[in-house]
Image: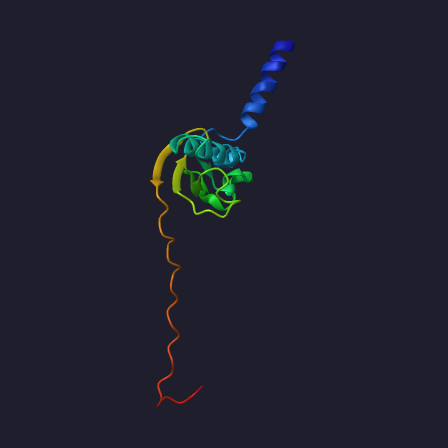
Length: 140
């Protein structure tokens, strides 16, 4: 009888849990921190190891900080600079830029989008100028 009760309790718990078809991003919010760690450590190996390379400080912040470009059910994309040990503290220019996509469960690198010399910053979107009224038009 106890086995039957235990089995029914387990089935009740399983029935109450969200469907496995849901996105892991929604089920496990801690995957963002795991994804940050995976991306950072992958970039460290990719760029020669910690003896010659350190990623941007944002990759040590909880959840990637400003380095997180996108985080949703499709996965995570991080973009960050890096350089020799101490480069940020010493005010040195970065020597590398890395953009990495990590799986939604935060466990593996899906793709290295870019790893190389720092690219120029993307220009800010320009706002269209406000049209000036025509000289002959009456002022409102």
